Image 1 (cartoon, rainbow, N blue to C red):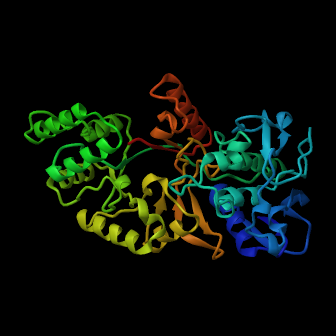
Image 2 (image 1 turned 90 degrees about the vertical axis):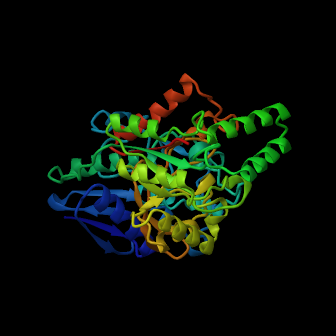
Length: 436
């Protein structure tokens, strides 16, 4: 058994991240030993030991949860070219950005690992920077452009997975008999059902309101007239609804042995919510078809729900009522609107197993620095919640839309998505893709 010697500061935080990295991810048996010391020491059989810098958890109490803790740009880089070829799961690049630590250029394998892996992982997984940095877009979202990952060029790298592989390399070198927990790559397509049907089952009032919004945004009258004509044809069943591709999506996934999670809304009355009723026969039939084919139904809370416990809970009750006794385990916030840690609390307090909101709207990549799901930690109340985050790696509009990455429906967009998928696969992680 290994023993991790750490200072008796920020004990709840240290316990959370050490347990996650060593036990949950690697499956290594270890014990804690808290003592006054300047670094982190890992000891074990055969008198070998590993030393890591202790940076984040040496922060003064007066500075905790302040913007002063965010690492300065540009980050220091540690070149591991001399050890990377010995690693089973190699890093994306031998130049490793150091979030917290004290790297030494050209370091040889030994008893000192110059990255504060525990503090860095804690910083990324808890989304520390999102609590202390209040820059937001018009939808109240923390954007990729404000993150240290984007500013330092590693948003497209699962940096915490890379750190874990480096840590494992050192542990295995010092204690060759230890074994690692095995895990498999999971391809996890999801679909947020914002507008299930464009015309089918929608009332004349719905169509009129949509036309009014289109006029407000400068759409030509002729286009709106065509819109009304199509609505009439669809509801007379003389043509299929242009948005009704659910059967095709499920069939395509099933050919690959995959299951899709379809996240349904059950409320919301802002223009961004595209409200639809779960009581309509077309929606009921769609939900039953999804369940019958063995795919997943998830929850997609409305635009204003991210910080409104009453609204969130009401919409969740309404969705559960609509799906009878089907067990809803998780889902994703609409518009990726999320406030750390408040929104996590909503999901945990309502008994959900996982949330899958944490990907950036403006740029696909590794918002949490990892392609693994992880237990959520509430930085304000200083406790682990009964909830796991399943990070969203890529959203279609993030990559394609001109407002964001702007790659369009192009080969470049496909290549970027495949690159992210391959990096998840390299670390046997989860490739969570959102396709509307």
